[in-house]
Each structure stands twice: as structure tokens, then as C-alpha cells.
Amino acid sequence: MGDYLQEIASRLVGYDTVSQKSNVEAMAYLGNHLEEHGFRVTLQRAEVAGVPKANLIAFAGPPEPDGLILSGHVDTVPFLDQPGWTRDPLTLGVEDDRVYGRGTSDMKIFLAQCVDAAAVLDLRRLTRPVVFLFTADEEVGCLGAERLMPELSDLLGNIPKPRLAWIGEPTSYKVFHTHKGVAVFSISVRGMGGHSSTPETGVNAIAVVAKVINTIGQYQAELRAAPSAEFAELFPDSPYPTLNFGLVRGGTAGNMIAEQCTIQVSYRPLPKADPLDCLHEITRRVQALDLVDFSGSSHQASVEFSKPLVVPPLFSPRETPLEGALFDVADQQTSGGAPFATDGCQFASGGIASLICGPGDLDQAHQPNESIRRETFENGTSRILSVIEKLCMAEQF
Ligand SMILES: [Zn+2]
Image (cartoon, rainbow, N blue to C red):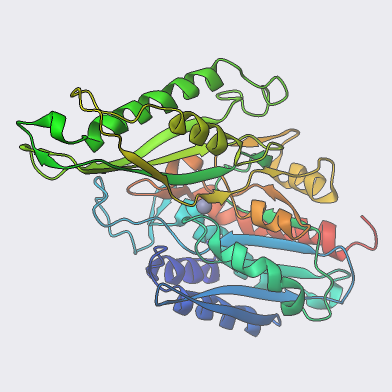
């Protein structure tokens, strides 16, 4: 195993970059190494809820069009309070055929491999720019990439903004050009409190939320019953928007009428449609409900929808030079639909077409004792170099 790769990987896993925490030290560490390898590095800083955050932008090569972006997020999902851990999440552990640690598959090892590749890249041979975009806050709604896009052209200076991006999310080197979006919102029901012995004097918010859930559940069943023919192959498990109730919170005590109840709802819209379509339909149906509880009371509850957090879907064009290069190094001939969302949806708003393909395994992402195959840990760097060679060192595609 390459010593340099292992050093970068183990330092990077050692930084606790759970989305809620600061990632600045980790980004500065990566930036220093990329600078040593001849890249021009900028950290785009921001303060989010009082926590300093950074996106990293690094580039090398001549100011020609049609460069390549390699991208990944440095934040991870939490590990404290996650049952099942038998190792230290922040210590890179190499054991037999796997390498362990939080963020190994999703997706610090890909970033470490990018730095490892930069260390041996002969920058004088670049005919087109290589751009690394390492982002913050992907796991909480691609917010780092959202902050980055409006400023990217300026941050790249005289380098024309590349139109292709390779995002190394965990796919076991399958290639994906599309994914669904995500929308998350909450619905708060306000009833009228009182003593549980006289339910008809109030309106029970939990009971009204039950009606709301039932209404949304019926809509969910209708969506499932009308799958999209266009996306049947790309999303064979669910060629329709899927819905989820993620959280419910309400009531005060067993002998009180629940005055307040809130649910958090999310759904994953198909590409090409307006990602807010489902929310509009849910809003319409909930507003049509008779918002009384089951007590015989005629009091109506009130309902409020929060502003949704929306991660748009991704639908990148096929048959790009990047697709061909990834098919070669990943030994694939097909591209499909990823079952998760990525920063690619934000890149699309900046005119950048993303393909998703990476060394980690999706079934390891967000899991306790997260790991990556030792084989892909070790051979990822050469795959990156091969793609850069094809796209940024040839005279023509
Ligand atoms: Zn990820």
C-alpha cells in the first residue's frame, strides 16, 4: 500500500468532519498538500450557524476550455450514538482485505486518492485544466456546493469553468449519470390543549396529524401505482417518487390533550420533473382536510408547512468524453441511476455535467464500522491518473 496515500487517508479520517462541525482544518491540510504538488488552492470560507466551514478549490494546467473537475465532499454523517461501532471511527484501520474508518467509503478515500494522484502528476503535460472541488455540508443537503456555484468562475481566475465533473461517491465503480432529488419539509399542527377527560373542549394535534399522515400515505400509494415508463430502467426499484415520514414529535403528557404535533416528511422526486410537484400536491390535499380530531369537537386545528429543503435531481448527458474514460477505468459499459443524491445537482445549476463513480461501496456508506475494499483503496489513484491522462493530457478527446 502506498505510504503517501495511507498517510493522507489516515490524517483525513482522523479529522472529525461530521457535517455539524468545522471542516476547516481538514481542508487546510488537503490544501497544503495540493499546493506542494503545484496546484493553486483557494479555500472558500463561510460561517454556518457559528461554525467555520470551507470548500476547497484547487487547479492546475493551462487556461484552456474543457478541463475536468474531480469532486467529493469532506463531511461525514455522525457516528456518536450510532449503535454497532466496535472500532474508533476516527482511526484508519487496515485489516486483511478492508480499510476501516468513518468516511472511508463515503468518501474521504477518494479525496485522499486525488491528492495522491496530484503528487505524481506531471503538470507540464496538462493540455487542459484539472480542478479539484472538495465540498462541505454535502450530507446535510449539498449546501457547500450550493455556496460554491455562484462564485466558482471567479475563484477559478483565468481558468474557464470546466463542463464535466467526476464525483467519486461510493458506487463500487459503477457509473451513474442521474439520480433523484430530495425534498424535506415539516408539517406542524397546532390544536387546542386541555384536560384529557374533556377531549371535546379542545382539538388534539396528534389525532389531526394522524389524518395528515393517512392523506400523504394514500398519495404515496397512488405514486407507487403509477410508475414512470421513462425511468423504469434507470430506477428499477422505484421508478416513481418515494416518500418517507422521518420524524414525529408531539404532545406533553398522557393526561393532556396534545396541543402541538410536528412531522418531518421527505420525498425523492424523479429527474426532469419539478422537484416541488409532490409538495404542491401534498399541500393541496392537506388543506382540503377537515382538521377536526376524533372527539366530536368542532374545533379546527391549524396546519403550517415549513419551507422545504430541496436537493434537485440530476440528469447528465450521455456519451461525454468523461463517460468514455470512466467506462474504461471502471470496466463498465452502462450508466444508470444512483439511489442517492449528490453535489452534482448543484453543479448542474452552474452548467457542469456530473458523473458519479467511486471506489467506496454504497452498502458501507453511513454504516457503523464503515469500510472500503483494500483493493479499490490501493488502485483508485491509478484510475484517477488514467482519467486525467485521457481528458487533460491528450491533444484532443
Ligand atoms: Zn457521500
